[in-house]
Image (cartoon, rainbow, N blue to C red; front, side, top):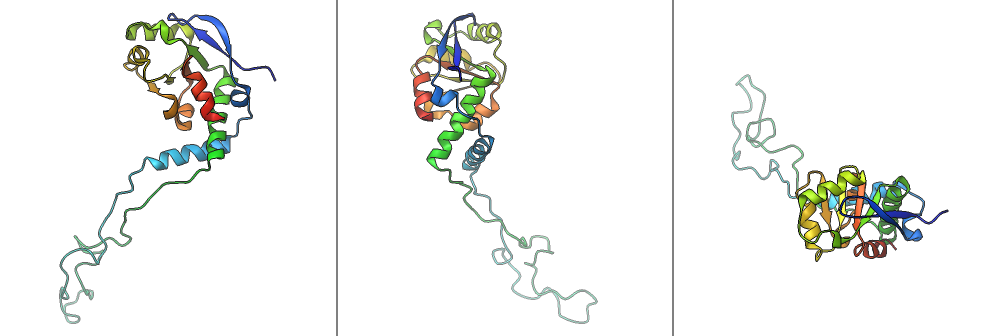
Amino acid sequence: MATPKAPLLDAAGKKSKDISLEEAVFAVEVKPHLVHEAVRAELNARRAGTVATKSRGLVSGGRAKPWRQKGTGRARQGTIRAPQFTGGGHTFAKVPRQFIQKVNKKTAKAALRSALASHASEGSIAVVSADAFATPSTKLARGLVEGSGLQLPLVVVALHEEDALRRSFRNLQRVAIMGPSELEVGALVWARSLLVTEAALPLVQGRAQ
């Protein structure tokens, strides 16, 4: 298998040269089932799990029978806290719970490699130098995206100290900016294109190995 490559883009979105990518990360077999497992775990980790409703044992009132057992013509009732009454408790009351789904480290890294390899095989990954953005410029960032042919939604991976580049892309719609340590499998699946800075690329590759 040929060594995977990504174009190095200038500020106008034109390719200046090709950069070789790590084969152990970007040339592996894509395993959709691991990607699916990792995305489910990431989405479940965001859930607060704080929803709660009251059961019939938690609502107030209802200490006495609402009416006598016989002679009224109505169905017998023992308490107004029963679910069929307005203000009564819920039949299957919801309680706070944890939605965290454990994923092994090897599985998580394999899923990240699969998501990155998918972008490499589709040619939807590019590298940019932070030096191309001396000052923040949304116009320059938009020109880079349009000139390079990168499709939206787009994920931009940059170091936090590459402030000019991050501020250039942050006002573009359907563009997510994150650091190498924040990159998730779900973001790679959501994005149709991936743009990584030269300084962030080794850290992204290191996370997936």
